[in-house]
Length: 318
Length: 318
Image (cartoon, rainbow over all chains, first blue to last red; front, side, top):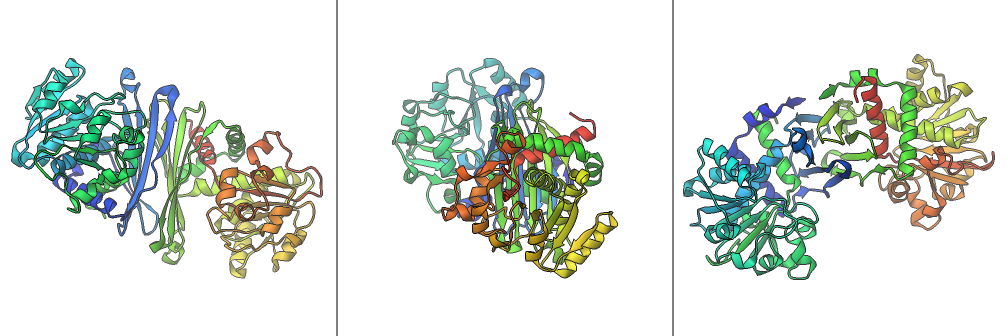
């Protein structure tokens, strides 16, 4: 049995292979080739924490994956990281444990970022390169790194807005240290006006981005809404979009960014498409340069399977 | 983080403490103090395998537990054990992984056996000591060992029937080597007639034990039916019992031993009680020495939490 630490896992991941694995995973999911039961959930309200358990299997894959991901939102005040967890890869042929990936949540952060970049590339105009990031937490950093890598040929430029100027400045400095220039933007509305693509990564519970702020041609990838009660985009914006793309229609309409608009009847499942179907070329993400497109990513188990596979391939196993 | 092998886990378990922990767990579950979402399930029909993911938290407990348990039923032909898996204990206060228990399915076998002995003691007559075991697989051995321990003061005697005379003889020799005498019985009906308590541990998909074989006063603990389509007791027997005890009413009526009788309207939830309520003394298991009582155990997450706690206590952690 393989047993990998976070450092070993980070060293094993090849980003280009990871992007391909994620894309293939989304395509397989949209094609109905992935067993992905509902996500398991435990809540710990006394400690402002929760645990999501995702598990699934891609038909024909010799392994399957169970992921345990915790978020305890008072941890930073205790000097502890908010997220933690691990992935376990098991043989789909014998049930034996193949590998324990003690990633401490890093693989979840990474695969979330890869999905964001994939969805953004799929939805944005072919000539777009001005990317606005909304939020300045850990996942904002991951999103920028992933988009900088995936879109490197079009030389993307990044502007960021965040509620906290201090966090925004810290992010700017961190990424500058990695060779990625960041423009800090004071007004969110101005960021929306200047961006050809927006990636939103906030824990907003009331919409912070409004339909009349968004110019024709803009693509938005929304990642914040991953549980009931969270919403970053106002329902009018969701309703006026020309294309609504979800990693999982079921999740997005139940507790993702499309849930609020669906709840009041502005849209329904027939008005949305799955990311995997877009990536497979079965449906277009946009029909014109003026289309407004939105991708909502709630996170699905096939991402965990794909990224675990990339780690195992990286260490020469399976 | 603690990381324990199967050998370390086996050495850490104190049986008497484990019985108490399981009983307390069942009581907490029946009292509504345990978060136990539906069991996660993945199927691997191409390799005759499945995976159950159980997770839960007892209110106030500093840890919670996720268990991954696989069963691949063609493994013995490959020289591999049928069951495998592990448990992960995490902090309910920070989400951090506290311990990885690489038990390879042993803790599941053990906690299933402890529950069987607990339910049998709860249901059988106070003066009963003749215990019949139906089945001669791994779990039959575990059940006999557990019952021999828990009921040692009344000097139980064990008789076993199994479809395969070879497996029955192997079990008899194995347990004789451990100091437990076993009587082999050729006819299942004869075993039923001579036993004061029966423990059934077969993968039967059609009922093998019939209502008119069971004498007044008998208690039956049924463990085989843990998935749709499995059934060891005929529905007439389930219907005629004076008490029906389930570890989880919801599971038992959905896919356990009580499901078939419920499906045809012979019984409903109001005709069953939960094991934890019996153990707490809230409802009696039997009202007379002539009552026929049945306990159906499908397996619940609180057993996994309880047994993980016993392991951690055994190694002086948490």
